[in-house]
Length: 246
Image (cartoon, rainbow, N blue to C red):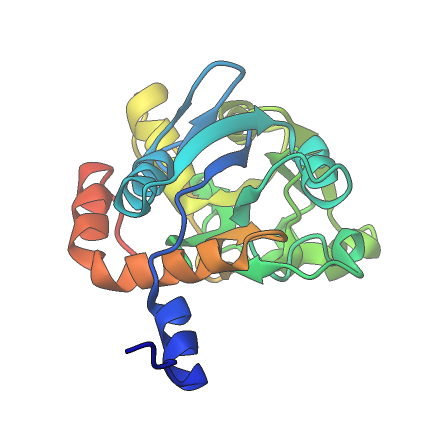
């Protein structure tokens, strides 16, 4: 008997078939943003790496991590298209560069609070006391853009989060704009000076999801969303390993 299957059943079979395992290049930032990530020419480590590796293992993908400065990463992702996936990303970032591009974004792998870390003596003095801030090169202090555009606040960009933090300690700027996770990690684990700076939650701040994005592989982004739900216990264990709570 050589009966044909209905078209609807054929389509269902195609949709339910397992996705092909892929060899993918993941573009990441060559900056120290531990505990979330740290990338350089030879290594990529941190919470994000562990989550991405666990995701790749579940779906059979092979990830090659390529670390580069933020500006180059956007060029290779959006223009050269030499990387398949980008981390971190967020729909509101670099919108001027992304015009015309169709980009798929996953759910957040981690939610990061970003704002000003100041010396304990300066906490609570208000926005009028902020004239200079430091940040990591490539970061945009979104909550302060009005003040920056009107030159009420000037920004110093540096190549490492540690250097940006030390500018506050040395009195060169009034606060550092970074994620509270990264700043706390550097103070505790690198500088061995816990409490040197504190988060001023009365000043403008924001919460951002760090997502993984892709132009060419929207199905991989859908898989990541599925992974974050079905493997939430795995993700929770990795967060615990890096002392991340969000």
